[in-house]
Image 1 (cartoon, helix red, strand yellow):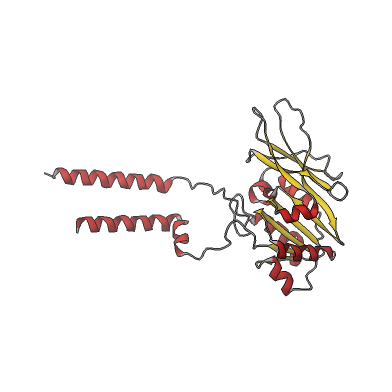
Image 2: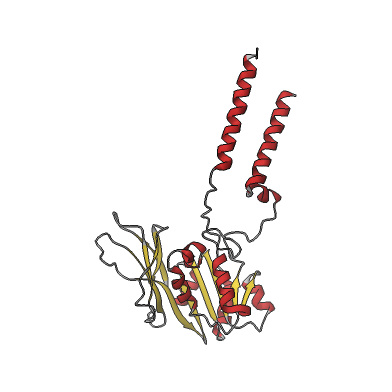
Length: 287
């Protein structure tokens, strides 16, 4: 007859095995981290964007992994469009000056960011604010492109955020609205139009600013007909000149140096690792 302690031990072991089986077969949770990394296929990565741009612009698309200041210092012949997309893009005084000088020579600076540094706001005379849905309203945002070619299109929807950023102050003599955002009201009425993408000249070049960087993520592009919205924004880029895609200012990492990342992000390796740890604990306990 088994001892009472052995019975409890067997019950504990069976319970642990069952729990592990449930955890192993549980669907993997979606990673909603806004990484904006070109290699990431998670919802808020930019794998799809970079893939589409490679097909559309070919060899003119250049992936830049160093800071803009270093790149512009090392390549004095760089001409075309410098493209930034991230939750927050803040350059610092010296780097911003370098980018603006480069833009003024006849190039395009395209920045899609949820937040901007004060130096850039003061230089281009704009301010941003948050737009929130009122009580009882749907959280669904409606995005529109303002160019006459796109005005007849239905609005492009995005419903993952309960707030939107927009430009509440712009240089009305220089800035031109490209896109706007609104929230859908329950009675179907329209709110005031809120610009969230603007373009303005700078020297001999131009600057395009967007406060909706998620328009370039995998999730947005693959949702409904939203790819047409993103394609419309990319039409403002001169594809006959080089396009420098920034990979430096990103919230996520493009690659991981820790071996444990591979183990913990591969289901089979992760559970083999956990079972090995449990086995070691049992060995220590009984020995």
